[in-house]
Amino acid sequence: MAPQLAWIGLGNMGRGMCKNLVEKGNLDKPLIIYNRTKNRADDLAAKIGTDKAKIVDNVADAVKNSDIIFICLGDDDAVNTTVSTILSQDVTNKLIVDCSTVHPDTTNALESQITSKGAEFVGMPVFGAPAMADSGNLICVIAGKKSSAEKVKPYTKGVMSRADIDFFDQPAGNATLLKVIGNTFILNMVEVLSEGHVLAEKTGLGTANLHSWIETMFPGPYAAYSSRMLVGDYYQREEPLFHVDLARKDARHALNLAEKNGVYTPGLKVAEGNLGKVKEHLGDKGDIPSIYGAVRKESGLRFENKD
Image (cartoon, rainbow, N blue to C red; front, side, top):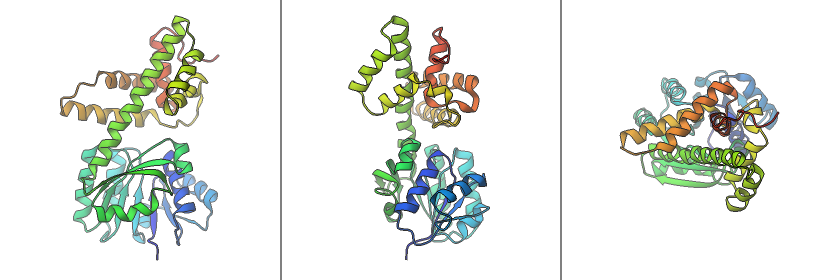
């Protein structure tokens, strides 16, 4: 008999991950789902089939009858609060899997707290955009006790992910350490693209010419972010794919790690500062490629590149 799965948190990534768990995870029971905004859970259930999802009203109900509980929340405070609620119940022999992007110190503390209560814990942040979550093409980073991690593997590669990076029998915080450092690559990539496009525009080369080179030289994420910038998606989207507040949180975690370990990261500081300017200009509509608008504005152009 397959274990009973529960999912807590339905952000942009969580919705796609849940959909693939239901469609490809060989579940023999409905997936239990809790989200603070219940309408989002109801909408997902309607999409994947109300017979395949059981929507509950609180964290306790999500945990009570579950064997494996996935958490995918926005920040450290939300994760800590949710785990405190989970641990107020009997969690003996349950497995808690955190897919959130948090500080590695937070993950390691969670591992200690959860295992001391007789439960198992795996840190499993993911790399990829919401479209990749929806199509099951994420990359899962899995860290923790091997026997616990093996219980998660039936739901990763071929279900929620196209590939896994396994840190078996390593501290769970190594997974989120990789995630935080990995996200600096994305942030710095967006910063470099933004500066390059503004330089191309102001020197007369033209952004279209630069984009042609990017597509040829750096197909994949570089070309995708470049396209989003040039078509104006970076300020026109109502719901950001990578919310500016989450990007700033990740940048602060990385800067904290750099400071504690004596690492020089000037590029990261510049990008983090530009995220602050994005927040000022776009508020909750700010997205990570909106850095392009901040660089444009600092260079004497309009934040928006379209009339």
